[in-house]
Every structure is written in C-alpha cells, then in structure tokens.
Image (cartoon, rainbow, N blue to C red):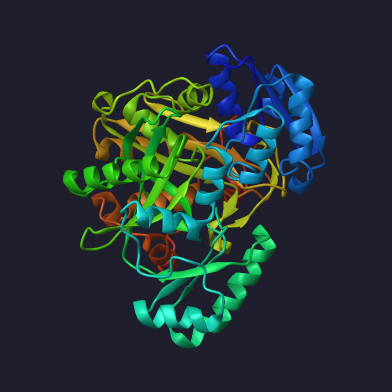
Length: 476
C-alpha cells in the first residue's frame, strides 16, 4: 500500500477519499484553491498544499501544480476523485511520467474510453449492444442528418469528449438538426476543447441503468450489481438507487454480466461504471463508461458492504482483486439523493450563499456525505453539490420512507440559498416513482405539472425564523 496519497479534488469527494486513506493507514495530502482554504479536507488532511486561486482552471485543473504538490509532500499516488482531471488521460500520463500512480485506469485505456465515440466502437467490438446511431464522430451537419434519417427521430447529438451531462442536444425533427449540430459542436469546443460529436437515437421512455465494476491489473474483475439513475435534470442525476427496481432479475443479471465482460475485454483497471439505457421492451443499449468513482457510489456500498474507495486504493497499489464474483451479495435497497444549492423553480439555477444553519439528518441506516457545516460559504466557482443523503433498508418501500424522514430532518438555511430538497420530495411522492416504473422523462413531467403549495417548516425556538425560500435545499 502507498505511504502517502495526494487527493486532487475538493468538497465531499475529497473528504470521502481522505477518510478511506486514513482507515487504511495511508498519509493524506490535499490540494486546495484559495476558495477552499478553510475546507474540512484541508483541516483533516496530514498536509495541504495551496495550488492556485478560486478559478478551477488555475487550481484543480492545473496538472503541473498538482504534480508539483505531489512532489512536495512525497506522495506515491494521486487520487483524482470525480470531475476535474479524473478522466483526463493526459493528466494520467503526466502522473506516470513523474513516477506517480494515477488511481484509475492506465492512460491508454483512459484515452480510449474517455472519448465516447471511441468507447462505443470498443464496446461494440466487445459485443455490447449500442443505441442505433453513428459509432465514429460525424464531421458535418449533412452527415449527421444522414444518420438521423437512418435511425429515426428523435435523436441526440453528443460531444465525443463530453461528460457530466454537458455537450448533449436532443433533436425532435429534421428542421432542428443543423442548428443543434452547430450549437453542440461549439459548446463541446468551449467546454472540452474538442468539437467532435456523434449522433444516436434518443430513447424517450427509457431507464438509465448502470453497473459498477472492479477490475485489477491481473485480469480479474467483478460486477457489484446495478443502479438506477433515471431521475435526471439536464442529463445530471438527482436520485439514484441500488439495485435498479421493477426489472426482472434475469435482465439485471444479463446487463451486469455484459458490462463486466466489456470492461475486461477493453483492459479496464480500477473502479468503473458502465451506463446503459433500457427501453420499454427491456432491451438494453450501452451508453458510456466512466473511468472514475461515481457520485452515486454509496448506494452500491450500502447494498454490498464493500468500500469502493478502499478497493480503488488496493487495485492501484497492485493488489490482486480481493473479491470473487460468487462472493458478491446484494442485501436490501439503498437510495441516494443529491442535495444541490439550486433553485428548481428557476431551471435549477445555482444559488450560492453562506449557510446560517446546516444540520444533517441522522438515525438508523442513514448516511450523509458532505463537506459543509454551519457558516460554510457556498461559492459560485464550483459544482453546486452540497451533500448526498443515502439510506438503506431491507425493502424499497421502507428505504423511500426512510429517505423522506431524513429529508424532513435536514435543516439548511442561508440568505438566498435554495436547495433541491423540495423537488426531491416531489419525486418521492410521485406514483410512478413509488412503483419503480419511472423513466428519464420523470423530471420533465414533474416540471411541467403545477408545483404543490409551499410547505413552511417552523424554525427552531432558539433560532430566528428563516425565509421559507431559503430553508431546505449536481456534478462529475
């Protein structure tokens, strides 16, 4: 095992990785920007190195500064978390060139899989079913139109280098395609420095199901079952659960086994997630593979009892996989909701501000992953994810009731701060969601429906009454 790991991230995931390292007896170092100087990760790490101003391009995306920080602290490995440089093959190669272990797949594998069109081609050769569409990038709007005409509308234009729900445009008719193609290429160039796009059939009533895999450098691999991530706004997830509900066990087993086969055939190493769309006929189609720890990884941990960050560290250290497939058992149901500082009534616009109150829920089988506390300043510089509430129960109904109870307890307030908690409550109250028969169209359907009247939560007697709009509140 490594002596020192540098954590090249911030927020809740930096704290999550830090805790895993400490549990394994590994010294921790974190990098931080000027905006995060007072963060929980900086306070708890063995060492902390300031690498730049608040701007992520000059701090958390500054590969040279991160490598120099690793040298300063004597780190042997870098954990990138999610987002930022976590799926940047160039950064993984820079780490290798400087004698640092990048905790993720080898640079060549990362490069092939981080490019979504390349990943589609690799997975197609590995026998995974794809959504109808182009495998290679489409170079012109005319070529995009030919693909769309062949597969039928609606289609989705996607950035080959996209991620985090960005670089995607749904097109419902031929008249919209040229403009959507041009706009998506421009957005992809601005966001990722790469304007290549591809086109595939857009499944309007589909389930978003993903599979967690662990693969070592010795050719061994296991899958840890499925997660359903269909509750999304702007292709970014709000609620996730494991295992995926209301699908036959045989279908879920086939998806999971297919995912593992694909990961092994392309030489994947580390903790990864293969994502699929499942249509109304329960046929599944490969979407993409994420070469990093996912935001929603806790639900898999809750139903398997396996610490995924521990496994990442062991695999990166060269330890053969510590699990066999027959040893993986799923127990009960886990559900996670993301608590973002966003206003659903304004298109989920970010609402930065200082938190005057922050009291997370507790109770049996309730986990809260967060870096926040009372007095914390939610700035405008980074992703709006503030906390994740994860619950476990023996069955899905109790898990949903437990999550509702936990959200009732969560007390967050600050001037101008809104959160996604009220909207998550609407999701949990939805009849289709309660039955487990929801699709990626759920959020749009709820947004199109009249919002329920405001619920006013009384303020504690010891605190002044808060503005009800500021009470209770995605990022890779």
